[in-house]
Image (cartoon, rainbow, N blue to C red; front, side):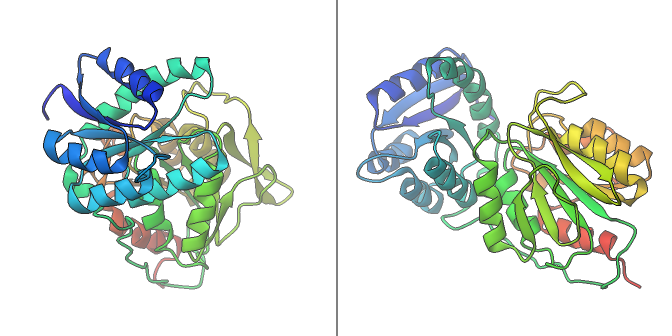
Length: 350
């Protein structure tokens, strides 16, 4: 890994370019090697300047961000951070960009207070993106190495709920796992994906289009049931409570445990451990940080099981690493093997 990280800024707005360049120049670990005003210019600059990371606007003339991303992944794979608008349309296109190989995204500032938040998170995301091996990036096609998990038995096994936590690289990882699972999986699935508000709904809709499972963004009162995957809505904490013979989703504005994330993997998995005990399976996928360690520890302490994605297939080996180093993982698996492991635990061979 060479420091400082070389970054190319791609944006048609002179104001946005100046804002991004000023933010990045303030970090001694980052070097802005140039900028481009549209996709065609970006392709030329990537070839000549060879940046480690590209920040890429979605809405540009000549060649938009999505077309630029496809061309980059096909010809000159490089870590890309998308700049997304605070709109429903922006969220839909951003989900597509993550599917096509973008490492992560940040929101364009909608008001002055957002600039401070952008300055806080953008350098961190760029440094994380720079560590992603180029070989793990997509090559101009959706990141979908799908290996269908065979349905082993129609009877329900010892696992009744699968709780999945992920962050950076998660949308593509979730796509690979969920689309490989059978639609009649005899266990419910609950998911936390770190994302800002407005993005988990489009993510759920996109995954639902591709998977045999029913997948949707959770609402308060949803019942956890076999064949249904519920994604925690961004900006809320999701937890599970047993009520009137069923397990239901509860949404809260704040968490009872300290956390930086909303939604938090820890918050969800702590409630999973409390409600399901030994009938719970925790799965931790690619992502920065250590969110999920407390929740996975609770699952293990109550007799549940834990799967972790291995370093070789993670975009960012942070959350899985924390779980593995804490001694919580029963199995550490490459991403294509995780769906099969889930099926084998949920519906064991008779």
